[in-house]
Image (cartoon, rainbow, N blue to C red; front, top):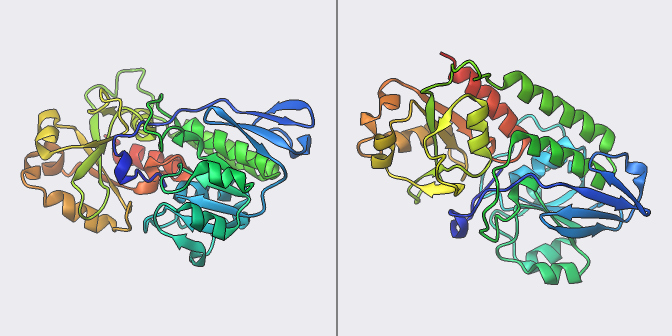
Length: 328
């Protein structure tokens, strides 16, 4: 699951980057047959990462990394899980890793990562660890493809749901599991195509939404802006994000701001720190003045798991749920 750090609530969204893999002197695109061989040079967020052999020990940061590995047929390589902050994994994983593998619920340190003895780290970036120190020990670092720039606070173009399937194919190549990964990616692409709402007829006119969430039980209400995957999911669902004009991915918002925009729909994320849908709904409805929102009085609140806002297969399920819930 995409987990914005407290230090980066204003961090930018990611972009779908081109991926080039080089093996045995040949160049092939992501999703190419695993017979391309090793070492592979992977273009990851504007830098080259060399994968000497199919990774066998992976430390993940965030739930999206776990989901992507599961879809790619490589979740059995996970030896340590970090950065999930209490958020649950989806129930439909094919090969879910044990909760016993959670070594740190928050952002891991350099020492914690080295102690897990991984040959690869996959996640949304490093906040408490030194990338150079890890590289010096021979640990390869890969980002979830939609999280490029997340740890550096740089701006980038929004990701789309094709980023999810692209990353599944990429990981299939990295882990020599392309047969499984490509089939999963094709299935995700088909689901997106089937679910995406056609707004060419103008049927989406006036269908606005705000996608809000709580970073923790102590933090104020937040919303997803025009950057990041949620903006694209809303668009695919035929909804206009009222905060689309703000290029930041994550915003602190007030009820007054929501009242000013009066979105037709409220999309409420839950589970970012382990809270239930009922708890998230109760917290939102307890906000002073929220009863004046037309979406609230009309019952137009859609609850989506926090994973629906991350670059993971759950985002595809989130699109399907959102399209169904907002059908009018």
